[in-house]
Length: 371
Ligand code: AMP
Image 1 (tube, helix red, strand yellow):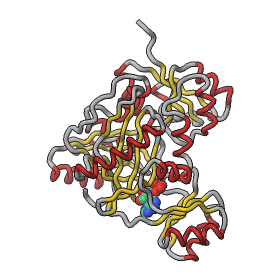
Image 2 (cartoon, rainbow, N blue to C red):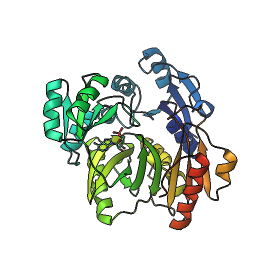
Image 3 (tube, helix red, strand yellow):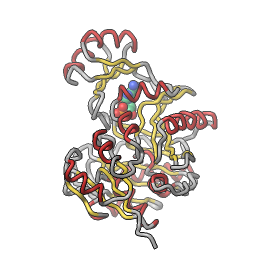
Image 4 (tube, helix red, strand yellow):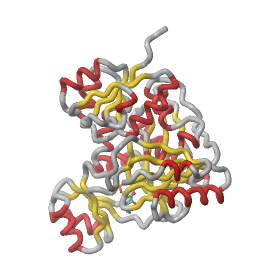
């Protein structure tokens, strides 16, 4: 019998934790590299602690695994290139490079035929002025790098707003985007295997507050045309990047049109419902893909809703008293705005699913409108 595949995950957060939880039943083993000694993956496999740019710790980590993947897209591209010389890195470094810079990402999406809202690079006050002429007002000014969960961005409604935001965001390495008055936000999770096979999960409807995902509902009520369009866009990205693994693309929907907001070269928060709500979870499918195994079915098992637990951990008693609630806690300490866990509800009946979400949001203390 051959030794179990040792999967190395760059990043030790909740996504790495859920990857490992999905991978143990298949016989995979895991090692993690993270900067934090108390990373959420701690209980699930050996944790190497160090900076992603530290070639000594990186080399030790890489020499101890068979394949490398990542659970955050802030891993430096140089780290992925260094890793690639020692073992397979999936998805490859190009996917990482494209998705960690909003400007590169927008240009890439445009180049493969994925619609996006008007945008402009901003490196100076002149470019800010020209950019606003192109996007119109309101617009959103964002840092090109390291912005996530609504951080590093400002909605600007006037020239004065824009000038202030420009200063507060550092005055360089910025991107200006047209503000999309979307009807709703949706995302598509897709997966591509080493042999090029591609599968798609159904569109998910997402509700953000303060830039952070609060609630996902799957499948999103959507026409087959909308689903087909999202699949076409995801396929274009996957094939162009010769991608292996799970990819998420977030869209703004305006009428029957989709505009991509961003992509994530990894498993994604809007796919957590797949643990209970799909034949094969996004986590298992990512592992199957990067290890060269056949992909699993992406069929839904009924309807699901996922509520994120943000800032404070609610009472386990209160959550588990809601029939059908599946609680996932990430083992993180409480902090405002931090994702600490999620709850998935599965119910074939839309009315009782809605009632369940209301009970969960009440237990969480969130003031979300019901789905
Ligand atoms: P992001 O960090 O780019 O995913 O943005 C976080 C959230 O801010 C999105 O999910 C939207 O709700 C909102 N947002 C970002 N960019 C835009 C935009 N161009 N137009 C409208 N809303 C936006």
